[in-house]
Image (cartoon, rainbow, N blue to C red; front, side, top):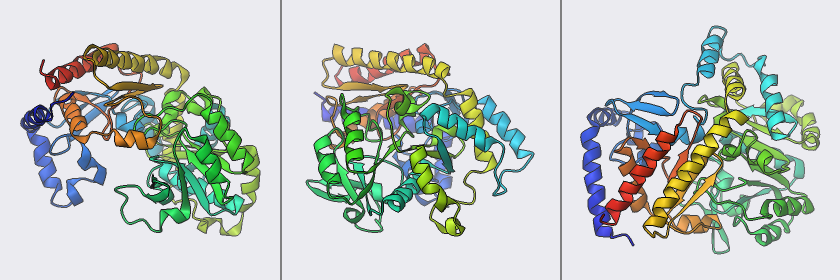
Length: 448
C-alpha cells in the first residue's frame, strides 16, 4: 500500500528538516569523528534516524532536551536502561551520598543483601549474584550451567538477543545453525556451541534437547529485541515440562520483559525458572545486573563459589557488585519499578496501543500493534509467531521514515524497531501527542 517513490521523497524532506533543526548536534558529531570510531562511543549509535545522532543536554523524568534546545517526549528511555525515568531523585541522592564514602573496595557493602532480598521477593528465586551488565550475567549463568551439567551446548530461540554473548548470536538457516547476520568475528562456529529453535515451537525444542548435549535453555519469555513476539497459550508451561524431562536448566532473561511488572513476566505469568537474569532497569541508569537461582541450583554451585580458584572461574569482574552499583540498585528498586509505578505506566502503554490501532484500522493498513506490560510497538505486518517471521517483516526504509518523522516532531522512539516504553513520568498528553504524530505520518505516506 506504500508508494516507495513517495516514501523516498518524504524521507529526503525529513532528513533536510532534521539537519536544519540540529546544527549544534551536527557540529558535535563532526568533532567526535576526529577521535571516535564512526564518530560515536558505541557502534550501534550510528543507527539512529537522521544523518547524525542527536546530542543530549539534559534528561529528567520522561523528557530530555538536546544541545539545540529541543525538548522531546522520550519513548525510548534508554531501551529500558532508564525505565524508572531519567534522573530519578532517589538514585541521584544515593549516588551523591555514596560518592562521599568510596565507590569500590572489592568488599561487600550494606546495600548488597538488601538488593538480594528484594530481588528474591520479586522474582521468587532465593540466591543472587551481581554483574555489570545483562550480557555478563548471561555469560556467567551459561558457565554455571555447563559446569553443573557437564554438557557443552546451550539452546536459544531463533533471532533472540541476550547481549553480546557469543553463543547466543546464532540463528537458523533452514536446519543449519549459523552466525546472526551482522555478528562480527565469531570466536568459534556457533553450531559447535549452540542449538537454535523457533520461538513458540515446542516440538523443535523437544528435538533439540533430545540429543542430550544441552546444558541450558536461555530465553526471554517473550521475544523483544526483534520486536515483541508473545508466547502462545500454554507454550511457556510446555517449555518448562520439556526442559525438566531432559534435565536441562531453564534460564529466563527478564532484562526487557521486566516491563511486564515488578517481578517481570516470571511473576506476572507464574513461571518457574532454574535461573533468571535481569539487567539495566534495576540500576536507574547506572550499569548493573543480577542473576538469581533456585535453592536447588544454588546448593550445587555454592561449593565451587567457595573454592580457592573461584577468582579465575570466568565469573566476576573487579568492579562487579561495587558499592556504587548496589547503592543505585537499592534506590531504584526501593523507589521505582514497584506495583504502583506499573499501575501508571501499563495503562499509558495501553492507551498508546489503542491510539495506534485506531489509526491503522481507520486507514485499512495491514499493520499491527502489540503490547507487553508498559512496552508497546507497531509492526508493518500481521503479528509474527516467531523471530524469523519478525525479522522477515523488517522494513528499514519505512521504519527509518517513521522514526525520523516522530523525531522531527519531538518524540523519540526506540531504535531498531518501532517501540515505545512508558514510565510513571509520562502523561496521557504524551501518548495522545504520539497518536497525532503517527496519524500525520500515515496521512503523509498515503497522500492525505
